[in-house]
Length: 391
Image (cartoon, rainbow, N blue to C red; front, side, top):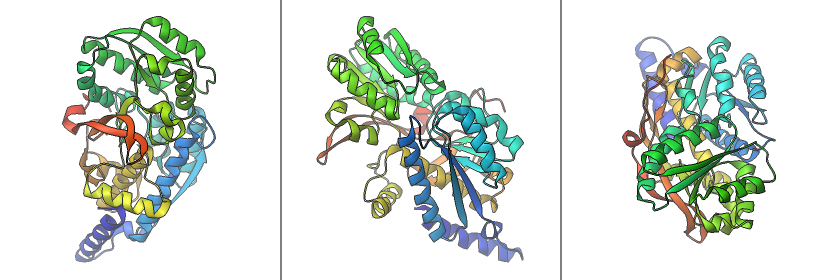
């Protein structure tokens, strides 16, 4: 069921209930205002533009379904301090529901402030486990997978791999550090030896020193935790220096739909986590992809699919709460069940992590084009991380 179809059904039920109670449906009289602070000019600008496309699509769909909704976006440049300033500005200007931040450090920067500001944050991209772990907050929810869930997804694959020595190449921010630690723990539990964890500053142009360090480490496989422009630059240089052809390469957010389009044959044969794919075989996803193609003449990318899923959850929470008030939405989201493009999913009450399925695959040719192709599916139960949150 699309957002539009769900809202039409929900609006009818809400109106009927309101009439029975002698009142009006609160959600019908309120405007849902969404703040979208995201990277529009930095390392992850490509991801930020994908976020905006998904938000625009979902807002248009919701409006056609009868919901009064609008959004406003500001550029964070993927900088945590900018994210805090821009998010606070949006909340103060009357856009209290925040989503769209790219870097995990951005999400961690605003999380402790949401209750004080009177807002609510929904993560659709942030991977750092701490966001719904030891730094969890009552007004913070995550619909995308965290690094721990991705690590649980790759364990069966690692168990079958012949490579014994592994290294990590990761961006030196909260996401990269967390993913590197999660991979190392998973690899060691699978009997592998970690021979290096190499952290790279964001916006690096020359990856040659790090590529040489990986070569010198004796690694037979590498786990790459890079995205956006960093991912493209690293992959191109790793190919140029012979690293990609010499060892097994896999990663998290490394070979996404858009990255593969930019890299072409360089990406072929690279393994990785696939958090969302336009090829998912659910009726809801097929309808979403069909409608998306009509608007954009293209398939939705992984980040666009995840952002749309976040919008689905948000809109259903508004229906459930009969309100756009952040406190009411907090109660509606916590422990709730939601119909999504990935099926019916639960927002775990203990830590506000949406329990989703997850996928793993490899870049290969499908229907005449290179793309990440799913080869393994993990159920929500298989990848549900342990609860470490103490709100």
